[in-house]
Image 1 (cartoon, rainbow, N blue to C red):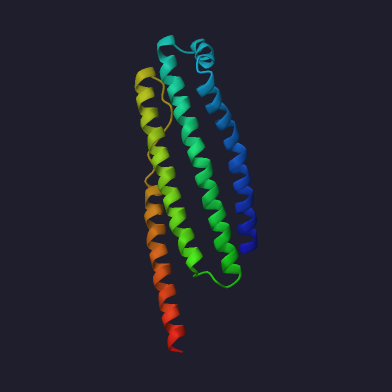
Image 2: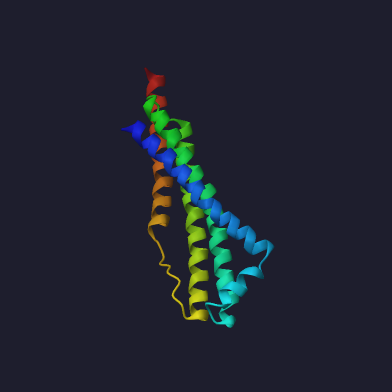
Length: 167
């Protein structure tokens, strides 16, 4: 079971990078040649809305560029924790550090999602087009839960070390 989870997380990490590369390329395109895209967008939208849509695309790409490495860190830390569990050392200082790191990465993804959402709302108001975003409370709750779980792991590790010291 753990071996399958380890494999699935590796595949998801590969997909994460494969899907992130086009956003990096689009971000580079928007940054290097920002005037090329508005002329193409202007044929579909009102020219007054073009700047707002380009800004929305730029923010979407920037958030994706932030999210891909954070997701990579999450996948690699989860895989490390699975390896530790397979070796019988699930409650290790490395696992505690991994949980904290995952929690902070989740917070980073939540901040990126919030930035994207605020931009989507602003651009939707300017253009009259609904750009499809809804706030997610779960990412914030999961981050807090992981921080609490890391603290519980640390307490469990300290109790195990105390028990081993008394025997």
